Length: 603
Image (cartoon, rainbow, N blue to C red; front, side):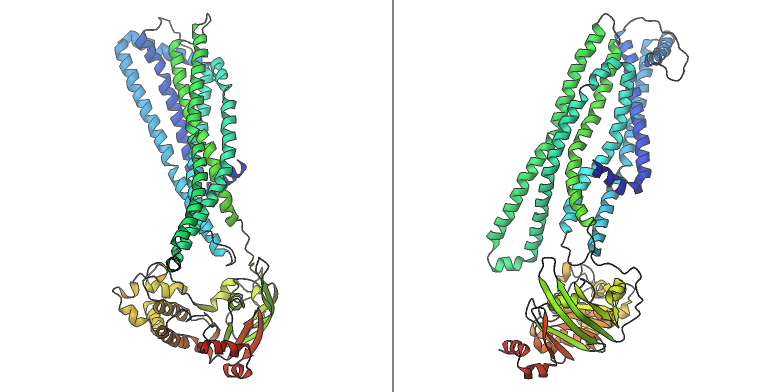
């Protein structure tokens, strides 16, 4: 429970005003509920004409016994009966009863209504915290999107829904118990004896539920991951006739989740019948014990008062049942919260400099000095890279798959940090610069253009939020995208769908190039920008790239060697090392690794 209170303190604090309103309204609801039940006593006495006792008025004072309070109430009732008659007083009491119940339910509704902003606000804040954390983490951190949907939803249903129970129910229980003690401390003390047994049963079941919930949520995350994987690779699945295999794999995972979720659901479903059974047993035992107090020689409570006592006692059962549901729900939600905390507490290995140096442009050169890098699994990707990229030059990086080309380029904008060595811009280690300032120098065009479910205008202006229509159109013209954009029914305001699905491959790439042109970066990174295009699209995109590269420092990763013949220098990587470097003609004449790559492509 300590973790649960930490969650409440962390996320509910901004909504403490709503919590205070809920507490006040719940207290009023409980008080008016007690008053409504107390009215049953004189109503029952009038209906059944129980006794002809004479009541004396006792002056009001602090700490009056409950018997004197009720005696004064009966005194006023008896005086009114003597003056107006039983029927009229009974009508007044019933109308008063309805009025009190009306106020009670209004307070109850108000208490529930003020909790809505807390529940919805906490869930929204939690989702935003996870999303911002994912945006801040380095690329090496694995994807957690399933946890945003699945686990946060579980926290909403299991934890935030119990906040209201934890505010309302203790208030009701305390007030009801206070009144019950004032009515008959012997009977109430007898009832309390059975509470520890109920708590023991609930806590034992709750501990088992939490363990099962953790595993069920892991299966849920695996299921969402497989769905996303299947949708992304549906073309390959169909091409290799692997539908049955994927279906079997998905069924295996979902069946595990079904079995585990069924176990959790059965235990949750048992909360109500178990608490119902315990409550009914308590009522039966209290009826027996209360009967002995009424029927004994020295009765400590009369029959109408006992009936009102039972009504209040029955009212206390529902809050206890709600608390039992919370005892089941909180461990289930905590299992999800533990998984969410794995994201929120993750450390960002890319540390900002304590006193970052200013960066107002790029003037001389980029240098890689003895750079080594390995991934967390221990695989060494780069081994002692020494490389200088002068301003305004185009450097091409080639090599077989897995040689370390993309990793080398990813180190420059600090998507990762090298294990050894350093990377400098104009002689300053990039780790001494603000990450945002560093990345502002760079523009990226990737093999698979990453577009967003937005308009064509929004995608081109993605890196410059204050871009004007004229600036966007100019960038689109340079990228060769303006004509096909105008052919769209809504022009630049056309929505291109998820990941630009409404555009062809060449069109997506030209939008990506236009985005980089609009940003106007001094350093351009091209990661196999034409590798996935057909010949005709490649030609038009390459023309757009040539315009983009003009006058810029360019680092181009290429598989198609024909696209980098004019590079100022070609860097050949093999197994994380630079094995050759030079211009295209020089490397061909040398007859080494680059020549073999070139000949294989020509063949």
